[in-house]
Length: 363
Image 1 (cartoon, rainbow, N blue to C red):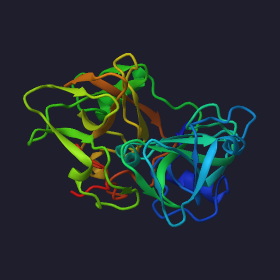
Image 2: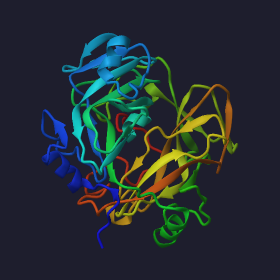
Image 3: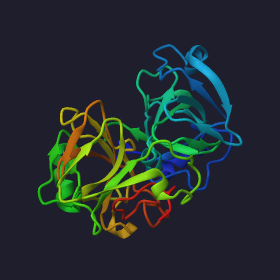
C-alpha cells in the first residue's frame, strides 16, 4: 500500500530538482541529496545585518534587507563570519513547490556542533525554517556563529531542508507500537508524551570518565568545509566525571554532551529532535534536529547510535543531573523507503556514534 502523506525520500527530492521545482544555477553536488533531506548551499555573497528579522506577510526578504544590511561580503573565495554577528546569505537553491508539498529546514549536524545558529527564511514568511505549500521564490539563510569564528564560501552547506505531503507525525499510540517492534530508544520504559519519545542525558562518562566538552572562547578559525583540520584542545575543554552525577551549566556557554539512550530510526521513518519542555529548565538542547532514515539501524552499520546533544544554558546557571530528560524525538512516516540509508550507504559521519565532536576536529 502506497502512503499518501509523509516525508519525501531521496528519489522524490531528486525528481523535484529534475522537474525545476527545486531551482539552482548549478547541478546538485553528488552527495547533496540525503535520504530524507536536501543540503542547502550558500550563494555568492553574504550581508552583515543589524539584527535578525522576518519579512512578514506581503513583504520580501530583499525589501527588509535594504533597511537592515550593514555591509556585503564576497563568498566566492571564502569569507570569515565573526561570532556575535548576524549574516544573511541568499542560497543557491530556490523553490517552485507544488501546491501539496511544504518544507521545513534545520541546521546540519556539523553546523549545530560548531554552535552556528542558522535559520532559513523565505519571502513573506512569519516563521523561521517553515516553507508553505506551493511556495515560489528564493531562500535565504540567517547565520550567527556563537562560539567559534568560521570560514564559509559559495557552496558551503550549513542547513538542510525536508519536503513533506500532509500530516505524517506519529501519535503516542503509534509511537509506542513502533517502539515495541523496532526499539526506537534503548530503554526499558520509554517516556512517550505529546507525540515524542524522551531522551535523557548521560553524565556518567565513557571508560575514561569523559562526559562532554565545553567550547572555548577566543579561538582560531574553523573552516566549515575542512575535515579533521582542528586540534580538539585548541577549541574545547574536556569535562570529566569526578564522582558527581550532575553538571552545572554556566550561562551562555556551549556544551557537547550525549544522550543516555541509543537512538534508532527505521528505514521507513524520519525523526526530529525538539526541546523536551521549556518548563524543565532554561536551556536549549540540540540546534540540529534531523535524524535520517537508517540512523542507528543495524543493517546500515548503526546498531543503535546515541544522540549527540548541543546544549546551551540561558541567563542563569542550571544543574543537569544524570538521566534527566532533555529532549524528545518526534517520528514521521516516509512516503517511501529511501534508495540509500543514513550510514554505510552514504559513508555518514555520525553513524554508530557515541560522544563525538563535529567532523572538523582531529580524532
